[in-house]
Image (cartoon, rainbow, N blue to C red; front, side):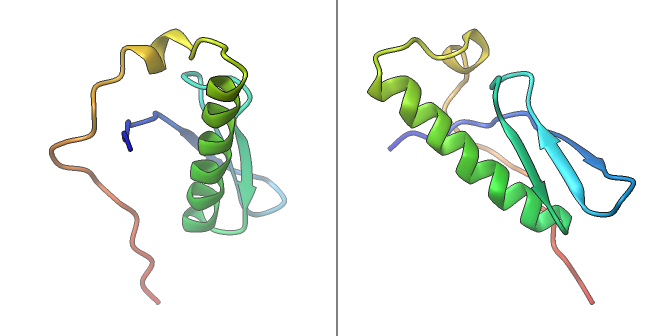
Length: 81
């Protein structure tokens, strides 16, 4: 299994919650109540979109084709109450 880093744009919604989209993966749209929930949904949607590309023999979007395998350091959100 291969992992890639996918750039996601996250924005707060006026009615509450958050919206995630990605220029690197057209069609990725995820909405959640919290940042963490939104990112988890975005990961799931991204995985399903990429699986669909591969299953149907479609080429991945150019930015994903050039993505390097995951390695190194990453920043993750941690909710603290």
